[in-house]
Image 1 (cartoon, rainbow, N blue to C red):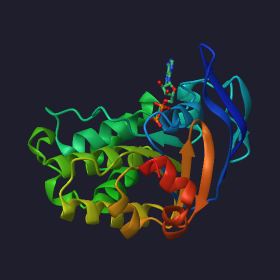
Image 2 (cartoon, rainbow, N blue to C red):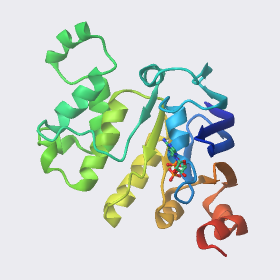
Image 3 (tube, protein in one colour):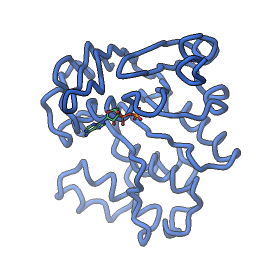
Image 4 (tube, rainbow, N blue to C red):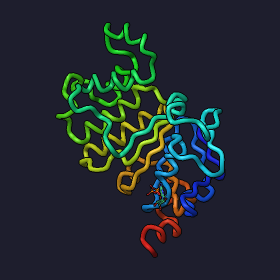
Length: 239
Ligand code: ADP
């Protein structure tokens, strides 16, 4: 599904990504961790077309992504959340989902929409558990509900690959568990890459983890393998 080979990004002589190889299979839920400055955001930026690598290859579902524009990559089925919110507070949950779904559609297709909720929006509502809040203004949602709405907005665009940046930051324990369950469910029929620091969350919900350090993949494996690895302990704890 997604394959990065020897990806390099250089900012003013600084190697933010220094030869990254990464393979993520169809339907996989992969967690990406690493200390600040490891290159996690840069890696996501390369996949989504925000940053063009100096060298290397990025293939997704048979397409080369390097050199494509962001909106072209979205159309190929790559969706991403940012740490800044994209929710329109003055619109309802349903309207936010509808709006997100429309971004991938030609205008003429909107004519038929008055008849009801599109399949993609209905699925996004059901998946995220936001159905009971569909008519509620997004401005009154809790922090966790707002994060789920953002994930729902991505789902409404029918991506094949979702890239999520710290989805459980600031959430309560219950909301984290709910999100862990949601990510596992989404990975049933999508490929999901999650940047996340919360080790407790990883222990509960992650199976496959990639650790980035200084622009390179340091270790890959299960949470247990990765957290027991002396190289990872050294990077995180300075041991
Ligand atoms: P992470 O997300 O793992 O914290 P980043 O990918 O944001 O790491 O950053 C990796 C390194 O690249 C950091 O040292 C950061 O300062 C540097 N960097 C990121 N973006 C830029 C940029 N646009 N210009 C210069 N340096 C950058």
